[in-house]
Amino acid sequence: MSLLTLFKAATRPTILLAGFLWVLHGVAHAQDNPRVSLVTNKGAIEIELLPKFAPKHVANFLSLVEEEFYVGLVFHRVIPNFMIQAGGYDSDLNYKASERRIENESFNGLKNKRLTLAMARLNDPDSADTQFFINVRDNPHLDAQPGQPGYTVFGKVVDGLDVIETIELTDTHLRMGMVAVPEETIIIVATKLL
Image (spheres, one colour):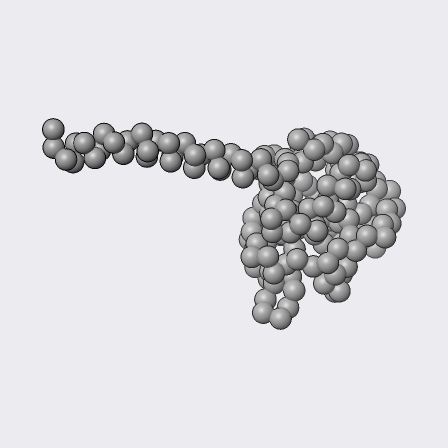
């Protein structure tokens, strides 16, 4: 038996073990990221949250899910080829106030790519509270730039693309001074930590 054959025979279990441990690490790493289901009247959207990159935003979002804050709220701003937004208004467009303010974490290296989840905010970078949006295309103009905070990405959609497309393509109109409001109410009927 050649030395090469002996080496291959000796290292095969090591390589297999290393591969197995790598797979386990990937599984464990994925399990570290909480998943949430947003159940709408159009179907469910499953989101994987990324606490390693945006711990304050993830903690805030999980707290809101646990409190069932989003139940009964609607997707109130839908702009095709841009984003869909929810988390602030009920079906009558009454604003659901919150005293929350989350410190901007947009310099975390995550980009506003298609199917990422980010927090909406005002001009003040630290003004995010409860409203979130799902990017339906890459939106690099929303990313942080040197010396200029962006919109913090803190999760990504892992299931429910068909639901997102249905919401994105819904007809919208001007209602109560708000633009891009869906003509048909798209409501969050439940939120679940998976």
